[in-house]
Image (cartoon, rainbow, N blue to C red; front, side, top):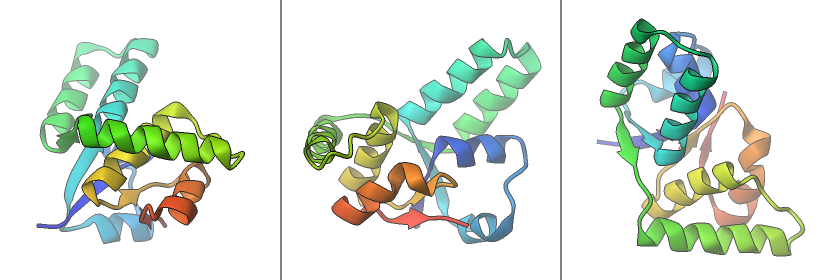
Length: 133
């Protein structure tokens, strides 16, 4: 089975049944993963937007159908290296995007995202494979 990590934007659209276009077609038949960061961001949105029980249950059901990639020693070391390297290059990246990239790189998995600019430096410099529209 081939796996792909969904960025938070792609996850959100999928949850809302709004994922369409070429990316949606390319994700068909792949096993979907999300990082621990995306899980946190999705639950933060639920809190910030005061989602009701039905919407929270929908999110919980969706999350139960994807593989969650947690941080471990390999991911943490990867994050430290790529974050430091980006800073040295004068291209510091947001912390959460760096964790998502580190999870993908440590596991050798592509990232499906609609926010290419957020990950372009990691694709160019670290070999992060991006799946986009």
